[in-house]
Image (cartoon, rainbow, N blue to C red; front, side, top):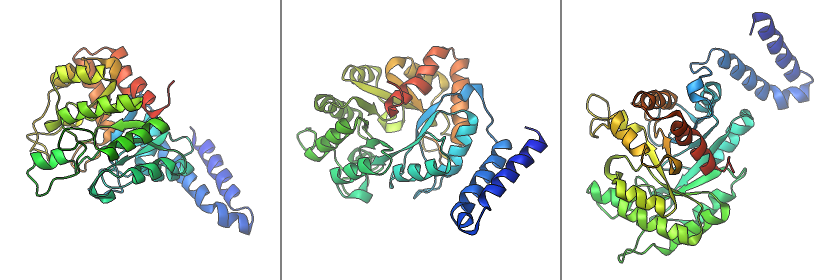
Amino acid sequence: MNAINKINRREFIKTSVMTGGALLASTAMPGQTMNLWLEQKDDAKFTNDDLLQGVCDIHLHCLPDSRERSVDEYNFMKEAIVAGYRAVMFKSNDFSCHDRAYIIRQALPQAECFGSFCMNRVHGDKVNPFAAQKAIETSGGLCRCIWMPTLDAAYQWQREKRKGKGIPVLDDKGQVLPEVVKVMEICAEADIIFATGHSSPKESMTLISKAQEIGVKRIVVTHANSSIWTMTQDQIKRCIDLGAYIEYCYLPCLWGEGTKMPQYQRQTIKEFASFVRIDPTRSFISTDLGQAVMPHPIEGMRDCTVKLQSVGVSQSDIDLLVRSNPAWLLGLNK
């Protein structure tokens, strides 16, 4: 775009927002916001990239949050649009983000951004169906996933030897708790994702079986290649047989020795590829990025695509993993 066109565009926006005293009061900020966005778009760090066209990342962490993050949701969405992303679903372990997605869409009408909701302690000491229902009912209908407990999951607390029991999803007999069943019913009725969160592999299989029985169509096993949640190939195939989609996160390929998350063992790209090859038709890739000490999520997604190509994963499989399948889970594809 040449300088004359940029000047004409700015003058048009400036004139539009300065017409009349009352109009100025109601439209000055939207005009300024759009002008700022247009200026930043021309100088954006992430330019239109063939590798990122149509990408959907449905698990990433941004500000505002109770932990440090590398970017805020609004600015990430601007960058994602310029990069060529199709859609994004934000995740916060402690707070709602579907309501913020509604506000972001007011400022960026072309933004296909969605939120999700985690059943952690901020919503009570057990899974809270009332909170889940209110998330579904929030303006815009942008909550597209209810996660079972994540950082506060009973399994994670047990493995980390924390005091207390965390938030359970199964009772002492290994049966799905009534409040979890209720959340499954809410997800089935709204036709959104029910995700296993930080449940153990064994718990996840029990949850999937029940969710299938309840009628949930969009069931997700959360980061089945990550840390203490890593599943065996047989477990993954069993989850798929039960009706689930399997999420593989790129974060484990970036943490480990020599990084600022050295407590975890790094996964090689060949190991990562061995997971995504199990059944690309029922799997998808998320970055799980946004940590302040890790690469920017867009950089991570691009790196993931390049590395998968380098080890021979086909473009058709990559398209399923980062485009078609996550888009369907969001309800964007029939």
